[in-house]
Length: 96
Image (cartoon, rainbow, N blue to C red; front, side, top):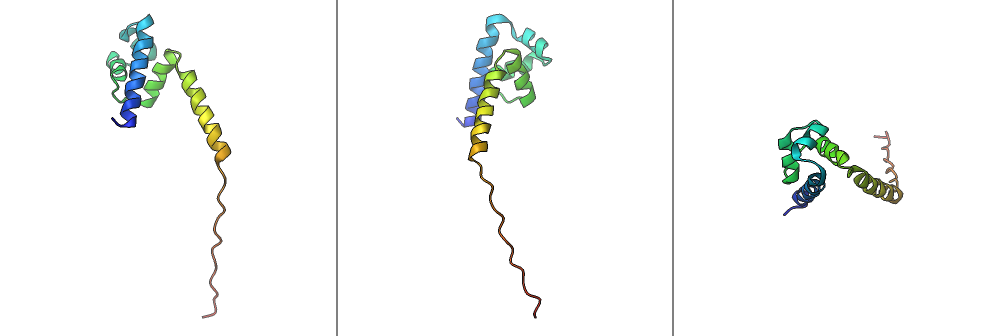
């Protein structure tokens, strides 16, 4: 199983588990402004629009943890970046 599909499946299981504790798929769909079939797709690990997925994660109070992880990774990458110097292009003489 490729990594993207594995991530979709894992997120789907998490969404399903958290959602089922307090509401049905129809209620979550109503709260997020998407269709019930979209919620079902997420829970079954099928691809959906990223913004839609984030709305669902936000509604289930899961987005803050994800945002914290992403922010941490960005910060780590930012400190590891070093600016490459440009190569000086050598000009040719006009003495032909």
